Length: 179
Length: 179
DNA sequence: ACCGTTGTGAACATGAGTGTTCACTTGCTG
DNA sequence: CAGCAAGTGAACACTCATGTTCACAACGGT
Image (tube, rainbow over all chains, first blue to last red; front, side, top):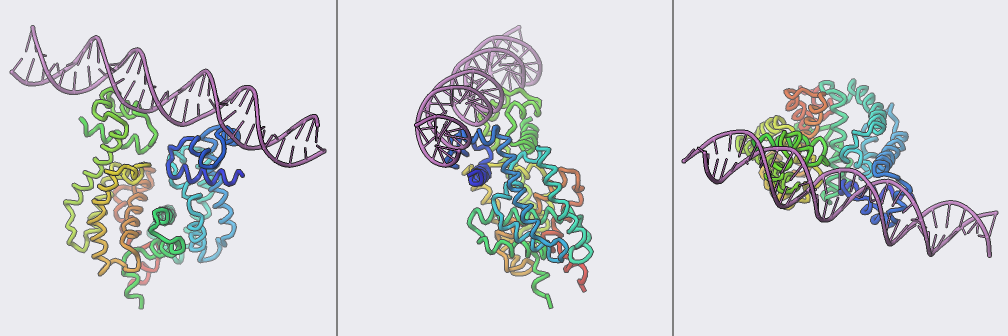
């Protein structure tokens, strides 16, 4: 079960980025030799985990209609649900030093950036750069995942929290006098 | 100059959390032996760096009037200016496993949480928990620091970006029809 | 000039993670 | 049954970060 192996590796490495390959193998219930057979080196394993996360995002991206005005809400809601598998991409240290991964992440960002730029004509504010908005979205996801991990946030509440906060902000101005 | 040593250690460890003590010593322009004399173990160094960051935050907290209604804006603006020294606290992996640091971080958070709770009576929305708002603020800081690091954001623009985004959100609803 | 402090490089021992090989078992297939 | 693929534990060599010790140089104060 290579799938299960990758998932286990994700959670172990996410909890402790310095975890040894023995730790990963033990957590996955396989021998260290087997792990080495599937992923010859540590960097190969990390890259595989990251690519698995990217695959997951790709599969979600396909289901989103980027032409819709609610595309961002849809995308974010789906991303929140992915959880740790994708959190790995934003958290694991040193991932940005991998050339191949960096370009793939950029490829993944581009359509979202385009979407944001397009929506800045209508529902998104124009006085902030698109990349800043993108990173704000990511920060919201990050927050949600962390809160879920600590048991402070119910997974089903997460999408609402993220979308509300990112879009409307934490100021009460938008909520009290919305006549 | 122990101060300079800590600052260098901060930036080196922030850029690569797995950097060796030799790397840190070399970057600081001191011998590895000297580094070991001042910080006997690696964890001692990491803890010192973190505590240095917490001291920095404390010194900033003192200057903020937590009774004011604009306390959060003031606090955030000052925190943004601190940059990498404090970024270390939010980024360095495994920091939360240090009991002493965790409690000190909680102590640091408490007055801000109280402030948020108080302001939820007036300017902050009440339909989000205080801890969520706090983490949203932190996420904004994080975003700004990262953007500054990559050279995408001018340090002087950072406070405005963070405050605008966090308080008003990225939706244009709050900007277009503010009659 | 003497001495204590501080910093320095060199050397060493140690431990841990890593990558490799090998012999053995298990299970499936022809 | 024979054979092949996959998994496994044990053992090994290698590298590297770490922590320690030691002898020496630079410096400042007395």
